[in-house]
Amino acid sequence: MEGTLAVNKEQLVARGQEIYQRLKDQLEPGHNGKIVAIEVESGDYFLGESVVEAGKKARQKYPDKPFYFVKVGFPTVHIRR
View 1: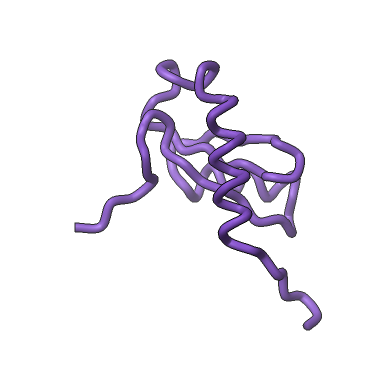
View 2: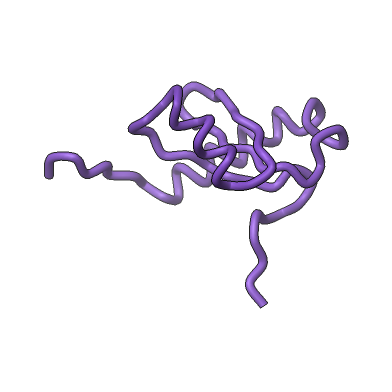
């Protein structure tokens, strides 16, 4: 399908978590609470105050790539209650 990106979500998450673990020491605690968008093929990452801000920065460099998002210093980006 033209324009459709096939993504294996499990692989995206696993790779994103692996990269974040390597970045953890340089991001925590100085950027705790910020959102990081990780492009899992390159390992490039982009910080923002929100998912929208981090995603916008990431898409400027990688407009057609999926990203792994994590809140620095926290196990998840969002908690639904």
